[in-house]
Length: 323
Ligand SMILES: Cc1ncc(C[n+]2csc(CCOP(=O)(O)OP(=O)(O)O)c2C)c(N)n1
Image 1 (spheres, rainbow, N blue to C red):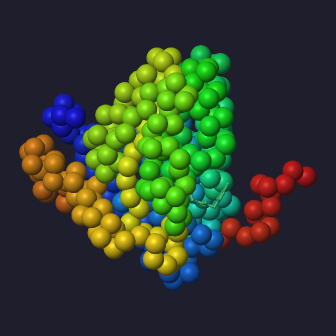
Image 2: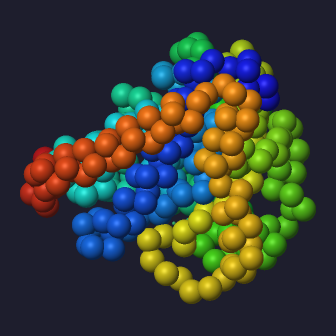
Image 3: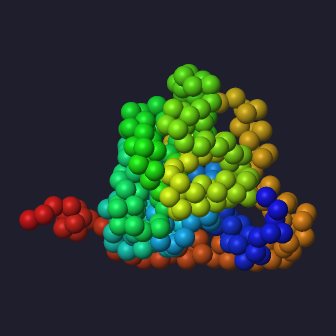
C-alpha cells in the first residue's frame, strides 16, 4: 500500500496504537510477576499489526469480537487503557467492573461487544451479530478475531457456512501465530494452508503478512467495504507470531530459538517505523512524541487502577445473579 495515499493522522494513530499495545502488555507482564493481576492473561506482543491494521479499517459503530488474547484488539478498537488496566487488576472501575478480567473484557461503547476464553467461542456469536445488522438493515460490519487453533473447531465451520450462505457483513480474521498453546499447526491442521478453508465456504480468502500493518489495513479495508455493501464475508489469514509464551507463565521449550529470533527481527513496530521514516511522511521527533505520550498513559493507567476500589465477591454477585 502506498503510504503517501494515507493521511498523516491515520499513520500516526496506527503507530500510537501499536506502541500502546506493546507498552501495555510489557507492563502487564511486570504486574503479573508481582502478583497484581488476578487470574490469567495472554499477551499480544508481536501481533500488534493485526489488531491495529484491521481496526483502523473499521468505523466506531462497527463491532469486534475477541478471544482469550484480547487486550490488543480492545486497545486497537479504542478502549481507554485506564479502564482496561483496571479490569485486569479486578477493580470496580474496569470496563466490566473487574468481573470479566483479561479474557472476558468488553466495551460496547467503542464496539468491543464480546470476548470469550472458549476457543472459537466468539465466532458464531459474531455471525449472529452480523445477522442482526443485516436484519435491521444497518450498514455496520463485525469482525471476528481468532487464532489458528480455533479453525479446527466445529463452531468455526458452522459459522463460516451460515455467514457465507446468508451473505452476512462479517470479516473473519485468523491470527495465525503457528501455535495453539504448544502445538504447531503442522500437527493439528489437515489443510495445506489455513486460508484454503475459506474455499469450502465459497468466500474470498486472503493471506497477509500480519507483521505489516499497512498490508493488513489494505486487505481489511477491502473486506470491510465488501461486507458493508452486502457482498458477504471474507476470510483473512494474517501470519504473525507471539513473542511471549502462550500465557503469562512458562510452558517449557517448544519453539526453536532461531524461529523466535527471526520473528523478533521482523518486529511489526520496528518495520512500520522504518517505513514511515524512509518514506519521509513523519519525522523521528513526531514518533518520539508518541512514544512519550504512551509511556505517560500507561503510568496513568496503572495509577488509576491501583487507586480504584477492588471488586469483591459481594459486589460481583450483584451483576451475575438475577434475584
Ligand atoms: C474449547 C476450548 N478448548 C481448549 C481450550 C484451552 N485453550 C486455551 S487457548 C488454546 C489455544 C488456542 O490457540 P489459537 O486458537 O491458535 O489462539 P492463540 O492462543 O494462538 O492466539 C487452548 C487449546 C479452550 N479455552 N477452549
